[in-house]
Length: 221
Image (tube, rainbow, N blue to C red; front, side):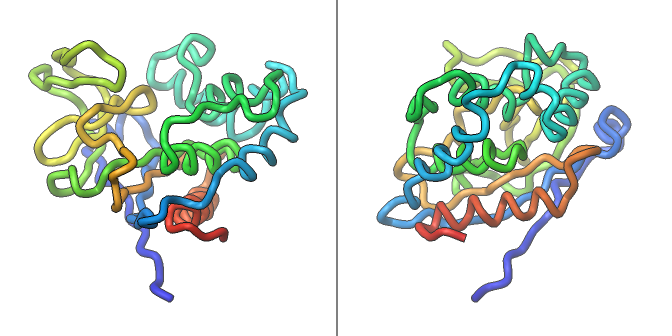
């Protein structure tokens, strides 16, 4: 069995000053031709844990609390712009019937399922649509960005924290992804990403990445 290769996204000094202690770990993964392993069982496990929880219980979960601190560090109120794991639990599990979780496509659904079970902030990009290496950096005020669900591109203000490859901005960090590298049902290679912050360690992120990769290749870890 091939040993998985984890990498850390490069961080510019300016970005590091803004988010000390934050790292983005990556793992490349294949998506099975027959599609990822069904994620409903993973979602159901998370539903059993969170469907009866209160808002305060979700927010007090250690990993959620850690990502809420990241939101504050980035200048956002975590109730107005909640971290992704909190949003997934609130929208798909808490006080929701079994099976009400969001469905986008099998690959995205699988990664989201691992995110809610592990409470690790995960993302995925279509690897074949990336140009060179991904870095965490600040915007310079000239970059155009089209977010998923947006009507069209906008010019980003200078000083925003983004993930970008060598050609374009891919994601407004911890907020929204762009359309260019979006994963579809035709995607066969992905770059998985996990966000390590104070309180959510790198080993925890690696475990979540491995679990997500296993689902994508059609197996259970």
